[in-house]
Image 1 (cartoon, chains in turn blue, brown):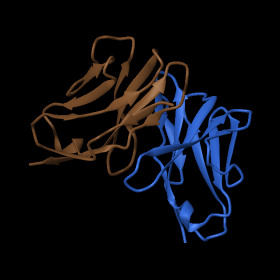
Image 2 (cartoon, helix red, strand yellow):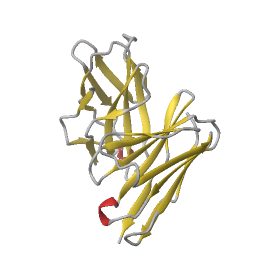
Image 3 (cartoon, one colour):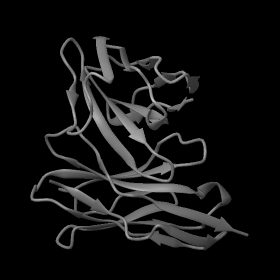
Length: 113
Length: 114
């Protein structure tokens, strides 16, 4: 599978501000990346599929205007949480589809205060 | 829609013993893939083992093996000679043959005791 770097690993932001999370495929050109959200002691829920050079595909119930996804290159996808609120506090994980496997980033713990 | 069910929220096993984690799934597809992922406290998702539905032979990776029962739509994970480092959340996941989405079960927390 691909080598994936996700940054930052954790972030604290004030309510109402925006936060950007990056997911980089270091050794594989990924046309497709995925963004998941995981609440404590729960499973991973797919938020959206990020497609290089085109609009992301969002899962039902995910606000497109709140969770902005940009996949401008074959190695980078970004998730921006806009106007963050405490209920957006969660663990966000990206996944890269490439090669034999599907590699996950190390995740970002977002805390909105 | 495909669903994945893990009916054991928590399991415990003694070091060096064997434990089996259960997973069932529901699908109308004939071509698909099944996975077990491990999520330790670091929360990094680690692929443990993968099974292609068209393969009758059960996948094996060192101490990890699966019991894949296609007709019963069951995909259990057996961990032999359990080690302290095996303590983690384990997620069963499904992917359709032509799809790229992974559908996860709710997870099983495995404790390994001395």
